[in-house]
Image (cartoon, rainbow, N blue to C red; front, side, top):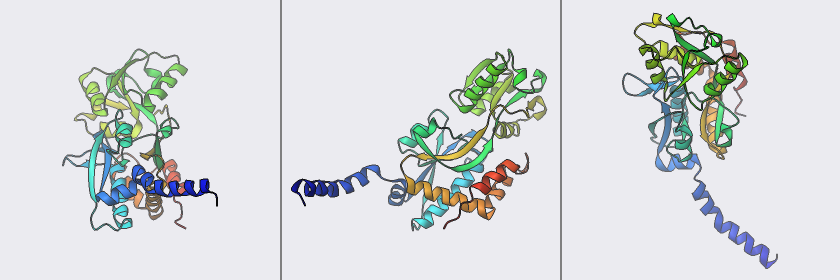
Length: 286
């Protein structure tokens, strides 16, 4: 063996532990801290929101609780502290990349643009963009938005998809940016907005919270396709595999249907499309 090769191998051996410490894979981070940081949305009902008891609640939150329970066992921990961190569409990626959260449990759509920065789990849900409007506005879909004041969260898939849908129909709406779903609903109730655009079930969740549901109308027309998944840091395959393995087990066992019915049962039954999603991601362990 040449001196140069031997030197190179020794340097690599010495660098290995340093690199491993610097990258700090998520599972190692969780095990050492005995804690996991989960991101949630405060007003993305029924997927992820702050409940009346002051605790995070919703479909995605329940799924992440199942994942945390499996991680506790898989890592051989006597206890695993679960810390919930509120995130918004504007800061969720940043908090993930900075390590403030380890897994985002919200209503985030998978896109190739986002995959340049983060990784995604198996799909957890599929929805589509729609509009919630004041009943008096006569709005029943995108085709009725010409000249209307339409609220939405900027720089989201809804923002881009609605712009495309409006352009295709040569419709000009007055877009009003809001920071969160709650602000959009308040705009509708106060008469500052004619419609609010987001994913259909998120809008259904907002509608379920208003004192007078008759004042609002939820459109059954969709203008986009929104595949949801849990978001995590890129380059950590061990953590990704553990998350996906847990999701597959939830799908195979039917536990996911119980979670679905808990949060969406009052809106609708499990659609054929969502059932297909569960089936296609029910990967075997071996």
